[in-house]
Length: 375
Image (cartoon, rainbow, N blue to C red; front, side, top):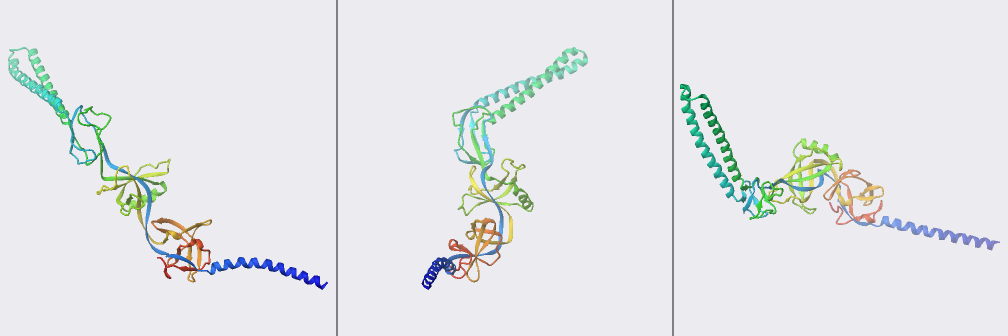
């Protein structure tokens, strides 16, 4: 009996040992993970002033666009510019063969001279017949006819003057000048082509690119905020050629559309740029950033410190004892490489910016590069 009891006790003891050993082996790695110092890079939580900005994708538009058409028909004699050339307002662009219009002007001037001579003679006759009709030497009917002829000739002379002015205008239209300063596009009509008056197709298109517009759209929810800040002064707009562009073009917001696009829920805006270096080109897409104002005393951290988990965004904060705390945060917005924190942090704290994958709450850390790490 004692022997059976002894064997039973041994079996129970063996089972307990088997159950106890795995539990110990599980606890040790967890404890060692927390006790082991994980090398990390840190940054400082700081308070500073940051710009209030709205970003969008914009499209560059010419400040003014003119399609050049001829107002008279004829043979294109000369093209006075090259494709893609810059032209100034008043520069001559095209010459239409003026000879038919010079002939028409001479004809109109000759008609005017002839009718002027006849009018002068008619007026002399009216003057002579004034005395004769008063003395009864001629009939009143004959006198009235002479006056009527004089009046008709006067009307003819006036018509001739209008014809001369029209012929002069048609001749002037043979010489086509640039109505603005800008850059010419592809040439549509070449020397020797027969040009139709007011044809559907332009002979060339000129774009004014100094200044130039950048058109972009923002959500309608931003409209009231934009109007509020615009009432305090002009809003600056920057146009970036690419994400790597460090020298953006600078302009001012000059246009807010009068209607919100109901289909997209956005409103169209335009900024005007001097474009003195011709950096912006019509049709080009740009990254647009509009600055509304400045927000002071804002909590800012390096953007790489912000992590995302199942419960939302969080940051590992390094405490004084070099252990980490997982702190939930709310990110208001990101500007360049910095995240603006709405809630969850206060100034002068250290946050982990690299090495988060090996961290759990309470993990001991070793800060790379000294006690302060990256700031």
